[in-house]
Amino acid sequence: MRLHPSVSLSRGVSQNHDKTSSARERLQAQRAKEKSRTRRIRQAIVAGSVVAVLAVAGGIAVWVSSGGGSGSVADNEIVLPKQASDGDKPAIPVGAAKARSTLVVWEDFRCPACQQFETGFRPVIHELEDSGQLRTEYHLATLIDGNAGGKGSLTAANAALCAQDAAKFRDFHDVLYSHQPPEQQDRFSDKKYLIQLAGKVQGLVTPRFTKCVNDGTYNGFVKKSHAAFTEAGFRGTPTVLLNGKDLADEKNGQVTPAHLKQMVQEANKGKQPGTS
Image (cartoon, rainbow, N blue to C red; front, side, top):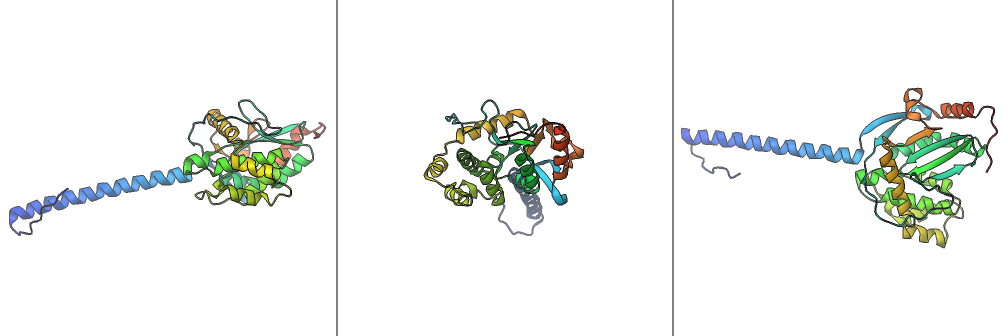
């Protein structure tokens, strides 16, 4: 808007000046409103909306970030990692194949809530897996890539599947969560960094593993898994189900590692543990 340049003190010009000042103020207010709205939208996209709470050890609350992502899957070749389950909901199994209880975990390696869940529940999950009481199925999603931008969720998931080929998925999975960057940073998109982290798992870094990471061998598998997450209508990550029951709906959403162990033991009571 072009404003009148006159500085005359006459009554008529003064009225025009008042009108111009009023128009300017309205314009400034509108611009401020639009700027605030844009900022709120940007913050919502980056942070995700909070939709559920899951308690972990020590009273730490795990906030489940909302889903979203691109919602589309590229027409890439889908290569199946060793021992991975195929079908509509591809997954990586950890633990005894014939364990009486199954824990289904939908996760994103860039998701802070997933990192909190893993930190709190990991010791109990490992104990139950190693004793043959629990089989865990990991489904990989790429929500943060879609919400905050970047490719770290996809690249880290592919690297974890490359580790599965070397029978070291669980070890590298835990390393990734132990070194998770802040959500707004996309460091996991750096394949050299992922290979550097893989060095913390004895015997994992080989020419085959390095090529698998650099080539994105399992990107199609990850995208199919994320599509399954979206189509299933889950509320966010982590989504954790024990024997088909969503833990976010158990104990008023306040399930702890001790509760999880008790629930598995009760479900397995009188049954023989599974063996590898």
